[in-house]
Each structure stands twice: as C-alpha cells, then as structure tokens.
Image 1 (cartoon, rainbow, N blue to C red):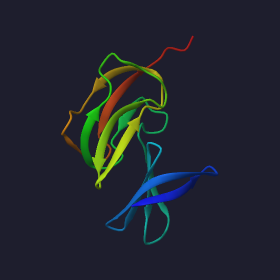
Image 2: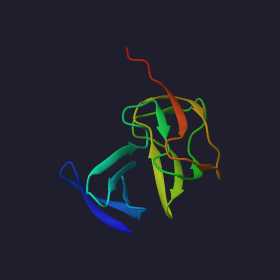
Image 3: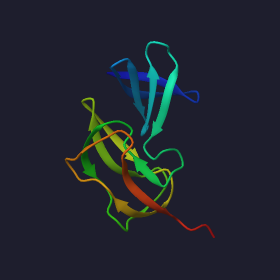
Length: 126
C-alpha cells in the first residue's frame, strides 16, 4: 500500500507492507522495519547499509534490473539496481561515490535479506 511518511521533517510517499507482525516501509531507497505488536523499531536497513561500500538487499526479493556494470563510476545516491519484493519495486542506491568493483547477483535471481549485491571501491579522497 502507498503511505505518506515524515522523515527528518519532510513528507515522502512510501510503500508499506505488514508481513508476519513486521511493518516494512520503503522510502527514498531506504527500508525501515518496525515490530507491529510493540511499535518499536526492530531494525533499519538501507540500500547501501548506511555509508557502506556494499549495497545490500533490504529484504528478500527478486533482482529485476541491474543499472551498472563492474568498472562503472558512480556518485553517492546513484541508483545501481532494482529489485521486487512484496509486490513492490525498490530502487537500491549507493551511499558513496566510487567504482563498481563487483556485482554479486543476476537479473531474475531471488536474494535473501542482507545479501551483498554490489561492492563499491570508494573514490580516492585527495
């Protein structure tokens, strides 16, 4: 279902799904979960694991598009792949600038929560 959420004081449209007592909310390339029974945040996952050099699967799903190749230069916030989960499509973005080092998935592949999908070699800071 589509919902409106407020993140850091800014309203965003998001996708939400309740699965086995956990509320999953996906907005702006980030996925948040909350225990629906207690209302407490149970974990927070992002498309790139915070400021990580690895883009991880924020939930179990199927990879539908890979938007980059090994060797591609990327900027922070750039979309790197698209996956489908809970009948919704999610665009995963990198958190850091750099070069795509490895892609550990293929289009059509079912991936598990937390699987490393794309590894980025950080851009050198001069």
